[in-house]
Amino acid sequence: MNSPEPRPAVAPCAETLRHCHVAVMFADLDHFTRICLDDPPDVVFGLVRDFQRVVAAAVLEFGGNLNAFQGDGVLVTFGALPARPDCATRALRCAEAILEQMQALSLARRNAGGRSISVSIGLQYGVIWTGTIDSSRRFGPTLIGDPVNVANRLEQRAHTLGAKVVAGEDFIQRARRESGLDVPELAHFVSAGSLFVHGRHTPVDVWILRKQSSEVRFELPRPLIAPAAVAAFADGSREKAAARY
Image: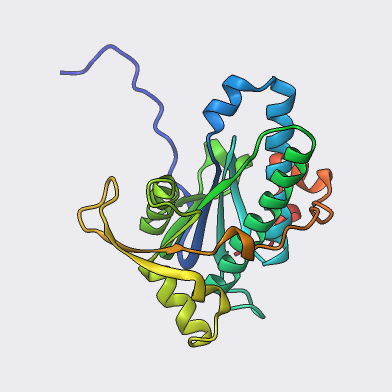
């Protein structure tokens, strides 16, 4: 029987759908809900601004692609570039740069009488599908795939695992293949066993960063990315804010 109600509009299919192998990184500010409740809005927005600038600068430096800022979180991908096929190694170094800059920023905030801040990061490698949907064209490509979901879930589990960086087995293996065993960043990772993550039928073997705070260089934050570059990303011009994967 035909319904008299109008049919809902069906979202158009993604255009230029393609798949590619990438390293995926999710980074998120810790305890952000509490910060929003305890701190004045101008302080919260200032923190988010500094976090986004730190991340954008690191992603640019290591040839990643900023896919989405989500308030206090960010999704980044690293693909094989013509002169830089080492996507997992670059993602590792980007994550370490973000940790160092955020710890330096936290130290500066504490010295000024503010609260400590920190960030958690999830990493995974694998095949994703990407395409642009008409209704979200200005926001750039939509990414789907197991590595995206896993990286997100691992970031969310970092606190319970007592770590700031959690990486999936596929990511660690990719990093090892890129440079053999000569990846200094991998020396600080230890196996944390298998972990079931929401939405997945099989567990993920995970590795966690065990680097001590004393090993991190506490420097004043280096010059952050120009606000215009972050604004370009916010306007949907990702090619102006980060390298394409």
